[in-house]
Image (cartoon, rainbow, N blue to C red):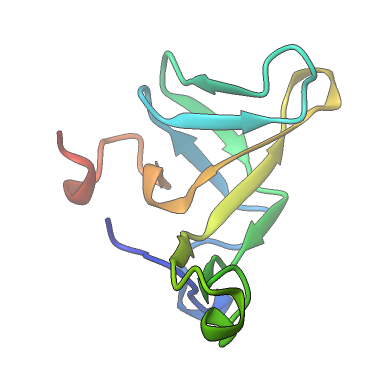
Amino acid sequence: MKYIGFTFLSQLPFKAGDEVYIFAGTQIKSSHPKCMRYIQKKRTKVKIKKIYCGLDSIGGLSGLSSVSGSGATRVKNPTVEWVGSGGYRKSCDINFISKDKHLPEHMSW
C-alpha cells in the first residue's frame, strides 16, 4: 500500500472532481441501507466528490492511550467518496484507485 494512515491532501495524487477507476476486488462502503459493504465486481470509472485524509490515533483519540488503557493504535488510510446510483454515497481506500485504467504496480496481486 502506498498511503497508510493520515496523509495531507496536498500529498495525495487525486483531488475532488477527478475521474478515477475503481478496480475489481476493491471493498466498497455505501450509504445504501440494503448494501452497506460489498466487493467491486468489475473496473468502474467514477468522479471523486470528497477525499478524506485518513487517521493515525492511539486508543481512539490521539495522545490518550494511557487514559483509555487500551493502548491500541488505530490507523485508517485516506479514502475517496463518490455518488453512486440512486444518489447513495460510496467510498473506498485511496490505495485501490487509479487515473489509469490499468492496475497500478502497488496493487498487483
